[in-house]
Image 1 (cartoon, helix red, strand yellow):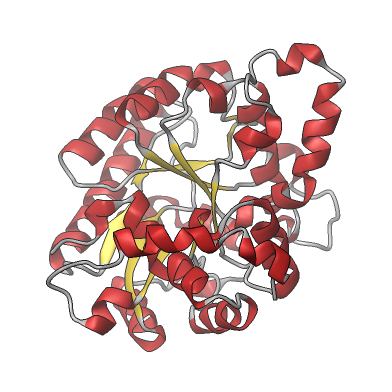
Image 2: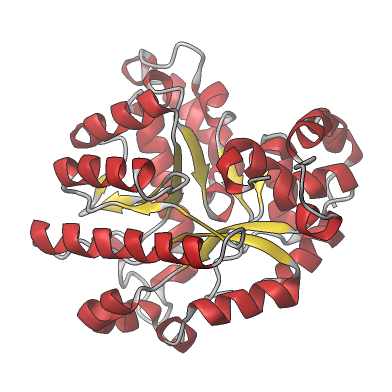
Length: 343
């Protein structure tokens, strides 16, 4: 449970709840059901082309290779989830730009088809063929302007290049121009695949890779230069809620790093949004809630890797304020992505 002294600071989020959650035309349960912003899809064409890579990355998560839209809908219905925002957790880049563009296009069209066939149940973050920036800019425009995607899905690094790398500057400029949502999911850097051989890298490396890319964006000045991007980082932002003060304090010893941070490192980090996938436990939520207001925390599950209902139950148990819970469950997603829910 988040301490009372911490919770008091966040009750102001109730205004955001009132502003975003009274969607006209929807009955009560549909209006208040959870929105899962961290819900993965695996298009059949992608699995056909790259199923071996997915199997190798999944390390025993056989439910990933067996995923279907029908299984997602059944999971959502059982948990009371109103809508899931779909995204790819697997890369589309395998060294061939043409293949990456084709796989990204297929993923985005597949997601758009699910949104069309199941209105009100699915949203989508667009897949981009990075590190092909030109291809990413083209696919971004197609997905957002023609297919109705609700933002873009990015990985934490591409070939060990983190999102603050100068090569991604044109993409960040376009996201900022649009005021777009950028949803960031971690991947494992090539350097860190088998540091502890008996432990799958996802156990530890994914949260740390989120932290690396956030720090890259911070000290490259990208968070300051592109303030209109609406960032959402999965898994509670990795270790950032716990390590933000260390990141900021050590940066003060390097004036060259702080020249592009007119408001300071902590102010930039505290503007970010985080999802709750795999961090609905009490210690993790306490750290997140002490770092940012609940109006910057969104419900996510990581399905099909992780089930939905246990995380919703844990969220209910570990966030004392009913107002905060409703912001996390659906209110903040509706505010950041108003196109998700239509009258």
